[in-house]
Image 1 (cartoon, rainbow, N blue to C red):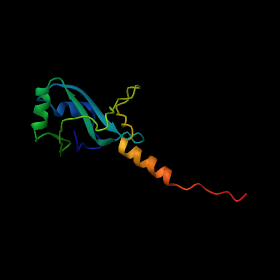
Image 2 (image 1 turned 120 degrees about the horizontal axis):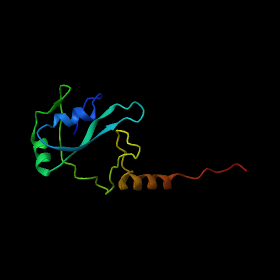
Image 3 (image 1 turned 90 degrees about the vertical axis):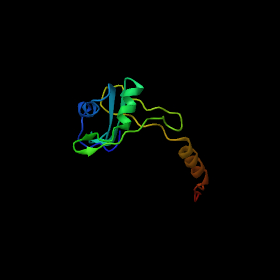
Image 4 (image 1 turned 45 degrees about the vertical axis):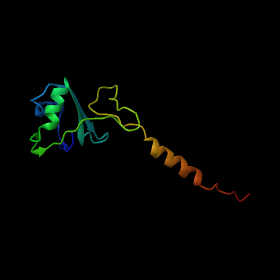
Length: 117
């Protein structure tokens, strides 16, 4: 779910999807301010409920129209996981393989510093 307001709670997101049965809501939050980062992962109990949410273009939270898309999973095969302490937050995925390769390549381009000994 995208385009969420900064001050939104799990129950507000859950209630916005009253047409389907919501299994869980995980709001992405800033680690320092704990404000919503503008998106959340909403899991539905059945694929039918998820389809209804994605097709409904009239869902609004705090007056903002929200956009729903299916989660197809990250391109590099890593999965997001919720922290174990139960805080309403999602952890970020590890660095993508293409970014990691680019960083490794750039690290090899650096010339070693010469000492003046």
